[in-house]
Every structure is written in C-alpha cells, then in structure tokens.
Length: 112
Ligand code: FES
Image 1: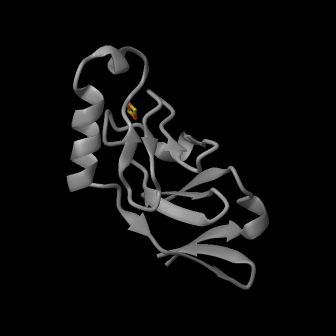
Image 2: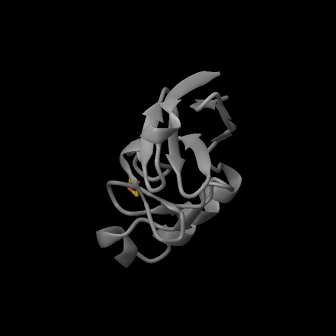
C-alpha cells in the first residue's frame, strides 16, 4: 500500500501521481494506471472534467475512472481521422486502465 498524503492535499478536482498510479478526487477518490492508452502521456498530469472523467494532458482523451475505459477518443488532429476514437475506445474495453483501491486512514489517503 502506498501513502499519497493527507486528504487536504487531494481536494476535489485534483490529480497527483503515486508510483505507477494517477490518483485523483472527482468527488470520490480514484486510482488508475497513469499511462494513456493512446501515446502514453502521464495521466497524473491530466485534469478532471465536469463529468468526473480523467482527461489526458496531451490530446484530450477522456477516461471513466471507474471502468478504466476511454469514453472520448484523442482530440485535435486525431479526432479528424476516421476510426481512431472508436479504435482506442474499443482497445480500452479489452485493456482498460488498471484501477487501484483508495482508502483513507487517519486522514491520509492510501492506494493499494
Ligand atoms: S496521449 Fe493521451 S490522448 Fe494522446
């Protein structure tokens, strides 16, 4: 189990890195593997959108952090290439981001 830090340092809307995890708070704590399935950007440097999805910092792909699946494919130039979004969304149905279990103990956030 890895300690992330005090709860106060992970308020709603924030994401941080802990080892191979992107750990965030979208109203609930979550932990997913931090490597984007598109070109490998670090999702711990991403953001959380209004739907609570984790948004990749490079090309804006969106992930459902509960399922680990990409729900919106890469944006920008990639969004104009037919089939790219569907291909990556399908890929993450087969290989979703790993999900870790986040627990709070004595005011500290941990991931396992
Ligand atoms: S690397 Fe994440 S969307 Fe391109």
